[in-house]
Amino acid sequence: MIFATISAHQAPPQPALVSNGRVHLLPFADMVAAIRAGADQFPNFTSSTTYPMDEVKFLAPLRPISLRDAYAFEQHVKSASQNRGRQVPTGWYKFPVYYYNNVNSIFGPDDVIPYPAFTSALDYELEIAVIIGKGGRDIKAEDAAKHIFGYTIFNDWSARDVQSEELKIGLGPAKGKDFASSLGPVIVTSEALAKRAADRPGVYDLVMTAKVNGVEMSRGNLSDIFWSFGEIIARASDSVELMPGDVIGSGTVGTGCLLELTKAQGPWLKDGDLVELEIEEIGILKNTIGEKKE
Image (cartoon, rainbow, N blue to C red):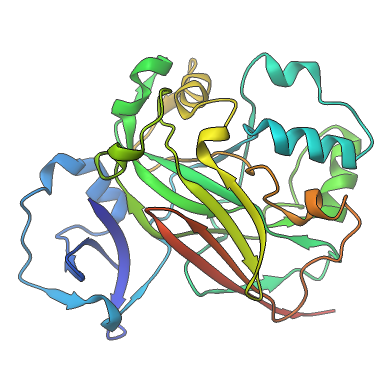
């Protein structure tokens, strides 16, 4: 199944089920409420209110309860570490790590991303994210799939110059990340991806690409991930309660950002650039960079 949050004819945002080229409005206040109800409620769902897909605006598919972002692709970690003049920390191979991002700076498909005045090194990051559907604590990696509602595309926008300075202090990233995160255009549930399933929990054979102004810059595959989503969820839920509507990003796929591609030297994103992230079976997440205000 495919879920989205949409606005039809300038109406307020509403969760919807996407099927057969149409969106079917769901009887819930928002997507988190629909997630709490469980995807098993909707296989035979019919709605009295439906629209053709081209008559609605797709918004960020949900407002996360929390937003964690992992660091799980080895190629990205190696390249990013090398470009910063350091080795991969030995601890990275011991357990999956993540940081918390800002749930109040969420953008959706076709939104303009404000260019922060405090940076001259704006970067995209090509990621996939899981949405927790069933809460839990101390979840085992092999049981994690039962707690995943679905998957969406995630752009973890980064101010690389600010991020670099923050990490030197030993805390962060913080201001280098908290200004924008993009999600969308839809949430695709696990059963819809079953034909692409890999042999590790929460991992699928899905090609991931990024384009800037129509030129392909990045290409990778979710199956290349070092720490599976099962392992990431197990770590995140260790002595902590995960909640329906929590979102956890994969971290950047190999080659999935300008930091890697330009050896941290730029050129970086500029005003007016169109960034398109595409993941097989999920869709394309497009955003334009807004004007930088000095």
